[in-house]
Image (cartoon, rainbow, N blue to C red):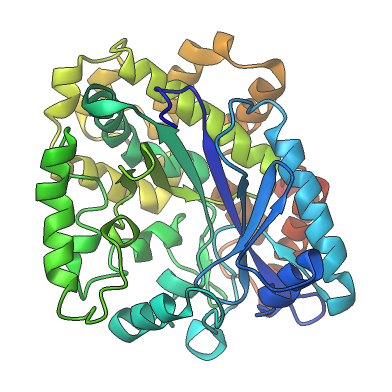
Length: 411
């Protein structure tokens, strides 16, 4: 079935399983799915939410079971599924961990590929890219799927998504630590995302998709180079170009949607859905040409947008917005920070958002990205014990569907 712009949405959330005592990643997603379903299948329907495996054996995904028009209670639905997963994991001495990266994991030693359905695909990926790095096995994100019908709607949506992508990590950055050290990037997940598939650069490009606004041009400009580049590695022809396209937003013409992938997972579904709601409302502004004309949106080159993204990956909402032309889109003067752009967007769309989501968005805008709050709680050179204390608290936040505040650690 074909859906029109903003008619329905698909939301996907990824979480890792950790051992309750050691806090190490626990590659037992197969046991979790078997406990839920009776037998092991890669997808388990649980009413309005579906559970599934990922590339590595310690990451589980939950997603809307098909497109949904209702974002109002979605965080509560996800929270109920979190509680159910944690209940099933309890006597396996495991629980779910939020945020986009495990702060102490050493992927080279701890990564285990999923060994069941789709294992041939994952094994091929591992052979080509060596999936033992952080960029493959220590990353969790939220994906937002937005529908379009036909080239005219794709053109508007793709143009809008490209404009917004560089500043999304300012809201969502939640990965400031790898292997027990602050990396210098509030969004370390996106930093490694950029070079994750360096062996075949056609797959990720510049993260920001190129200036293609019809299905035909997209196939010629993005899919055909990907297929050509992968061919020498994929002798059995088991990889699909939709699956291989790894830009920060990908066009899924097979299901009439654009999937946004630059969003770190948060500490709880309440935060994830709040961010999704604000992103969707911002895209409506752009699609409606209330900020900038469609033609002017299309004129932005991916290199210029990529430069903005690179800065935001480092300092999230605190990033100084140095591109005056980009600030002009939001009618802001030079010298403003990226957080000011999001505050301006929120002021413009607030009346379209329910009071519940307003409260949650305002918490994030006031207290900063989760990465900022984690860093504030930890200080500059945290010990392993201090890191564990913060991330155990984040697990509690996930279980209780509540925001993380640095002050609860610092008391």
